[in-house]
Image (cartoon, rainbow, N blue to C red):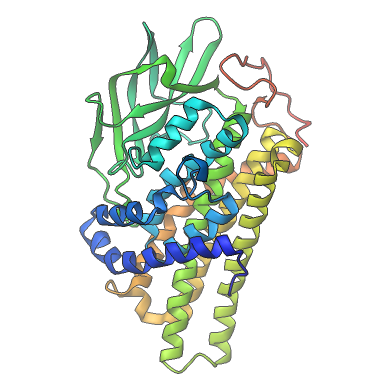
Length: 414
């Protein structure tokens, strides 16, 4: 269904659409060859799309979350893998831009200007094999040395590392005074202590080239540690600056793939002269309804986050549950859209040279991305009945001096 967009939203959607139509022509080749679309990044850099979520005052396009979401969706309509990869750049920059608008921190401004001048491309690298990616702990370790830390460990799902200059990552530090802490840090990917293993060979999202990233005695100076929290705790700053942006961004990608597939399927049934058949219209309607459900939760989330109500009125666990919900709805609706559309697409859904088959495979990544389905349902369900899943560090105490709570109460979340 046609969206009712503001003038700025339409401007960014038009920009994304111009790129998406070109990327769609390249997507099959990169999917088939299992290669990263470097030329797409050349186009996004030249068009200013890589600067989408940076403040205008610092050289960016100034897109808010509500303005970025339809642009991300439109990009994913052409190539879901590129949209997911560039999200690992756009989403963190959007997070930090929001912080800069509030604090006017000069160091943060310098960092954001580097991105606006195309000297910095970001990736978020926190996932580890065998561990839920909930930003509460890590198997990667940090050992204190003079002036910083030595970091050792291996991350998987390193999306966007093929083109990124820097990444954010996590490591566990056994603080002798305050107990185990999770460190969030900036890393230069060109550092010789960083190895990117070319091991990405998956069913879908092949163009993301989300290869493993290994750190071997990587020196991270103290000033590159941007945040820390007690291991095993939910943290307000992580909620605000990671999950509140990343979850709707993921959701917009998967909804965009579904919208793209719906558009393609609709064109096929019109071309075949069967669009007016009642069963065809009923099936397309069910897909449209799922897409619009996802858009509804995306825009509600964006409005609540941008206005600050999400952070002022919800506890940390409630807020994280809200973030999990928006991504859960979008990812699972996208899978259902694709399955539903097979009824009208028919055998064309199985043809490798047609885009539907790639889209069908790409959306299968959504349900296990953070928050994975089971983790999202646990968080949402526990919050609904007032069960505290983990101790929380609130906005009044978050930061390097935050202290662990000795016990987690099992009620009183709501």
